[in-house]
Amino acid sequence: MSDELKSFGPWDTGRSEIRVYDVPMRSRAEFESYLARYSTEGGLPQERQRFLEPCVYASSKVRLRYCTRSQLAGYLLNYISDRKSYKLLSANCQTFCADLFSFLSGDRSAKPYGHLVQANYSNHVQSFLYKPGRE
Image 1 (tube, one colour):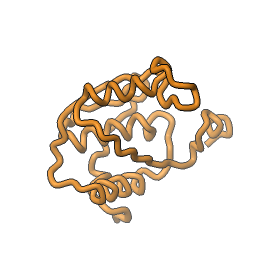
Image 2 (cartoon, helix red, strand yellow):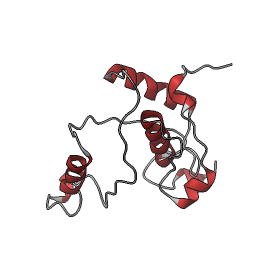
Image 3 (cartoon, rainbow, N blue to C red):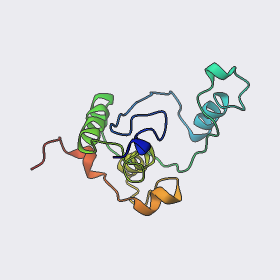
Image 4 (cartoon, helix red, strand yellow):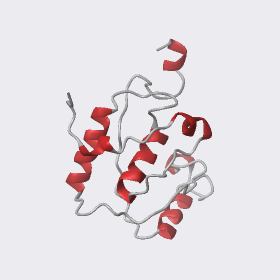
């Protein structure tokens, strides 16, 4: 990968990571309120803001059965182990979100947010299910 692409943003494009935040929201409206509160429009000082312009792109009920926190963590570890590196248009935060949404909701039509990323997207839901080391 070129040095230019490696310095594309404030992240290391040669690696991937997953962060999980357990926010106690029970509805889309509660979640949107949370996003608004911590956005630039929420009135908090800049150091407490978390979101620039939040947008709920898709919403659905979770259809995955019997998923505990530790099981979800295992699914996420499977995924990140299978999708080892960041790729600007095909393995990034948008593709992860589309894959996770599809996995949890059962909606196989989920797509990433950006049109450029959508053009290169292929669903990788199976990466959540299988331990790394497939032969």
